[in-house]
Length: 391
Image (cartoon, rainbow, N blue to C red):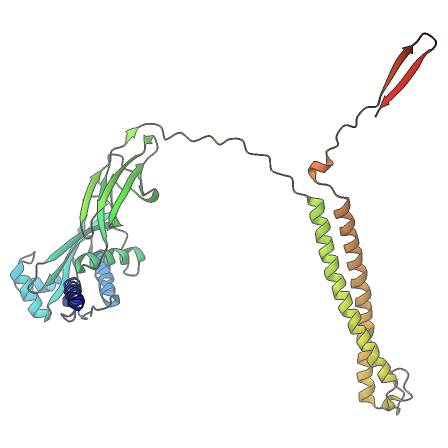
């Protein structure tokens, strides 16, 4: 019984996986895909060429998609195949036959209604399947296929047409032409002539507009993968939100400069003294070698290794002994210098640290004032005065 249930569950999972994965496998198993050079008007020829090249690069870089290298353009195929200016279903079928492919991208780039923007309308034709199309508006300064911003535009178009994307787009309208757009509290772009388009991840986002002299206004929008939506946000004249006053801050504690100087001197003194000790150890070793040189039979009769008498001793050995002697003298000088300076710095730093006081310690409290008290005393047989002092 349990085994049968497991088999049924496994079969259900396999069917579900086939349903989810099959469309992508089917789309990728149709062979190379053509990107027909996008059509344009007189003002957008460079934009069409740049977007076509960026779209081809995106296809090449996508796993499972094979790019068919060709230079076919829509402006050449339409008259050659006797198609209407805007290709119909029959014309697209003939273009597919002409290219010997089951799928190809085609479309156009034209000037947008908003100033300084162009609109790309790109289609994906699949043999035996409904045609898909998307529109994308972007600024007209994007013409270079290597521009990262244009690559993102091509990537969004490809993902929305191929079904591989997880983003949607929203167009924002406002009567204030230069408002700043914030998405989920983060600044994005500024409106151009009161409008702009954004591509956002699927889900709910808060779109907010801010402009000088206007009260900020926000609106939630639900982004659906592969779809376009449009919202209008109106701003009202008003002051910006009040700034929360910041309370008085505690006065910063003064830096203990003298203690820092003292500790720095101690560290420097210790480092120099360490070098002096190392040089002292080197001097002791070289002095031992020098003593051995004096007892060396080869150098017998040589008192000054650096100026040996002619014909006495071995000149090579004498020169080596001379080098060791000079190194010993140099080590002794360095030992004295480093130990002297290092010791002086360490002592001076210690004195500074010990004698320096922090800011609170430097404040002198008023010393109590001494006071005297005189108390007279009287009695039947005697009298007197008693003195008391308070310090």
